Length: 243
Image (cartoon, rainbow, N blue to C red; front, side):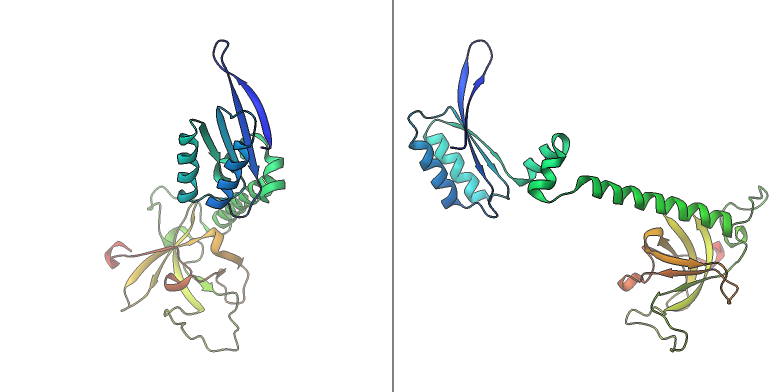
């Protein structure tokens, strides 16, 4: 055993607890059998046996531990990787990094940085691209923008190469009409497939960069393309009457 302790219970009752700590990449049924055999060599059997394992444990191995402990009339508990990470996250984040390689602070910083970037882009786009609100006009639509056409472009596109569609039919350089700017990203309208109008959302996370002073005279958004949806996270068909 790795740890032996006496746990005080309600009243004057107490129980003997043995803890087996295993820093393994894989904890098999054979490993569990060895650990339990070592417990049997002790002069006194425990009332409870706890396994603390730094990896995931299969159902087969868990069932073996359960059956073995029941046969010995010993209560048991298993702290595998997921439970350990959860406990360490809330109580000992320094140990979480040391033994699991998870840097909580770095992950939180990355999340916060991403949120701040989205907020900054939203505010910049609203200030640079949108007109002051006119209560006599609809809240949404191209009329709200200083420029009624934007350019969507892949970062890899070169102007000396032909503007040809990829395998999903998306051109590396094409025009769209702005519709709205929100907390998620930019909504734009465009022709796509059978010349039908569609509305798509470009997430801030998928905008690599932008240029509001290009020679084209139109705002350019350099976006990541993601398979069948191109630069958009979602696409819906819209009736021309609603434009």
